[in-house]
Image 1 (tube, rainbow, N blue to C red):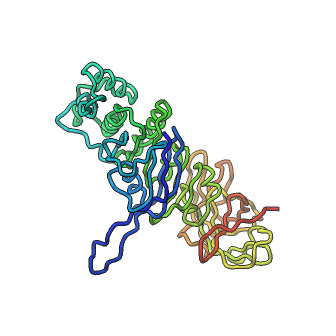
Image 2 (cartoon, rainbow, N blue to C red):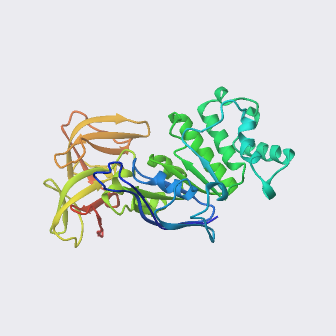
Image 3 (tube, helix red, strand yellow):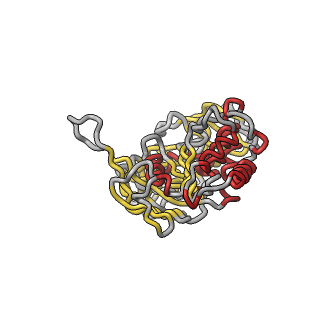
Length: 367
């Protein structure tokens, strides 16, 4: 099911009636979610991602704009008539019901031509439970399940109605790190098996990038960039997107372009072609450093953190906006910890420069 958002805007009235200023939670969001794809809505708290999800679900009405499921305008349609499956962060299971009863519940409320026999409902519930691999837990109650198992029950309950669109609102936030990894892999498997168009809301960029076909990065209600996860990571449109994506985060420096060269402090670190002379912000991905005895970029060595396959060189530089500079290099490199200074060459495709005022990306050609 293709989902189309046209100029979607949501404005909340101010809580302070005397101040009178409104809050624009989502501002003129236009996007077409392709049929059968998993889309990650990504951004910090307050960016408008959950509000967008709630408008798609019908839980909140847009101030302006339209929402289409396929060719159907569902903007004024109530939640129960949109054909959506919704999974919340807190699972929202009925504690007095068994797993089977929780999954069956949405089907028992169907009326008219959609009403099903008991046999049909049970068959559908078993299918949904098998899909999320909890069919052996059908007689247990939520209190007898782990957090990951409870989340699977919530997903099965959302899928049992065979929704046109599946909406997931931070579904992994209450799980520990190992369960989060396992459950996000399960969500991706289930989505691929069912082919249901899915919108996944998260503030965790690693989650969004690992399972999404496309990500939408938002800030203060405004869409910053839309694209395939790797493409957005490799080609950020502005400094916000560059800083939001990546673990460890991108290293940011105060820099200067002068005579076709990029300077960080006194070091001429890169040729940037015909970029005009100006003060810039410089972003360098942690994997963008190459250890070199006579490298162009010098930093003060602090520490080396061993991570197995890679090592993280922790250093400082007076031009750095971050407290420390992190460089991820292959563990085969030998680092002399007795030296006060470490030098690097930079991989041009891992270096981004941004306008100091607008924070928009400045493109340059590597010769």
